[in-house]
Length: 168
Figure 1 (tube, rainbow, N blue to C red):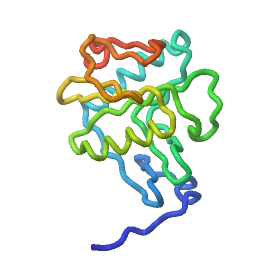
Figure 2 (tube, helix red, strand yellow):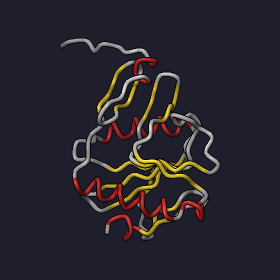
Figure 3 (cartoon, rainbow, N blue to C red):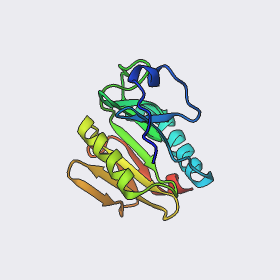
């Protein structure tokens, strides 16, 4: 088995990847790309949250690099940052909400590592959406639970979206 070549943070930040990749402790990691159901949900979330950005007092970003630690950069499917936005090229302070849409190739172990990165960084609201199962999950510092109320909400109820708008 060949050892992975480690890449300096500066090289990662100065390189464009298409699609964008994550950076985990010196390794460039390709993200699992979504298929049409994944893309449709991502679009629905961006449109719903984006058209209500003033009401929710957020700015919404698709696939935006976020530095979760000195040597780790994640790229959530959708990120919502409270206004006013302070970050410049990449997100360097905890956003209000990170949303991950599961792809067929995503493993529980990889998703848990991603969730742990977000929580350690200080993200208070994480939504995990499964297109295949048509289910959604809320993750906070107190754990993960399936959404059974028919709507996704942040811990502080500042952002709310009916599941019907997610899965339409």
